[in-house]
Image (tube, rainbow, N blue to C red; front, side, top):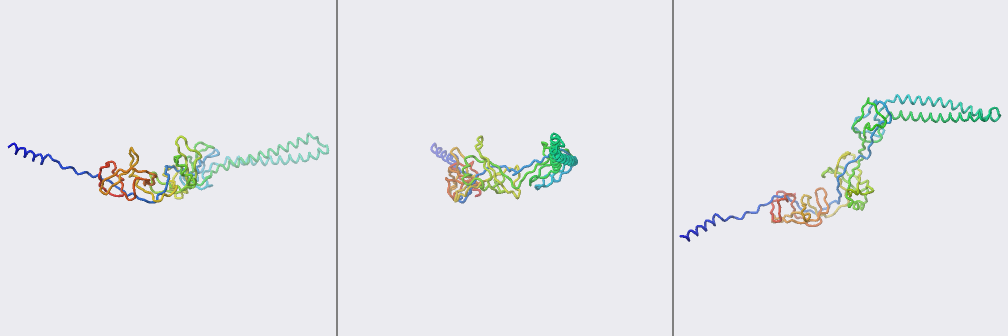
Length: 359
């Protein structure tokens, strides 16, 4: 009886207590193939768009602003009329200066005539030498007065010319700061309008000092530069490096550069931040993986390589450069291998994967 009970107990344990080994859960991931192709060698940075020239237009004479000849925000050409200040007070000043000049020119002519007459008389002892010198001094004084009057006329003409304000450059106007009917003052703090030249434009950016030698080795000024929206994407414009600063900023360890863009399409706008890429060379047959495949751990950078049996291997890699979401790898992977681009957080070296879609 006891023996039968033991057998039944053993059978019960075998039927109810034993559990099947669970099947390993596969981790869903997305993957991409390692490629070998030509890649540009670039230096990327964030830059800001600057106008080639900026002019703050201010009045140079006092008076009432009688007319504005443009609409704010429109393009203007060099020499195009912008503002008119009431010219009447300055026209009156010019007329007065011209009248003074005419009067003093007549006085000069009379004084010179008298001096010539006294020159003949003094030789005949009809007048004293002192009288002759006095007449000569009077003629010289009249000449100096006429010279001063001519300068006053030129000043009055210049003041009158300042009543008409023309654009000094080709560019685009900003907000109109003073409207017609207001009084303006010469050299006031607030400009009447600010004009920015936007064709062409500069893009200013900085690179680490360690990369300066690479830029200079490729010729420095003249290196091709492309500008795109922040974060990459479509190239907005292409230009050339036009300026390298004469010193490295010791506080940041960077050096400032500028690139010149023709900007005929006006894709770049002053004050805008863009991503710039200087192409220094082309690297043939580079091994390339998507940048999102690169992971960083305590021992450096690595990728997860998918094997034919859907298992993964954590492979350390040496990264050289990144261009437009593509990373050039010096070692660690081979062309044709498959790397994980999304889902790495759930992976371990013993994981198996379920490929959802291949990039």
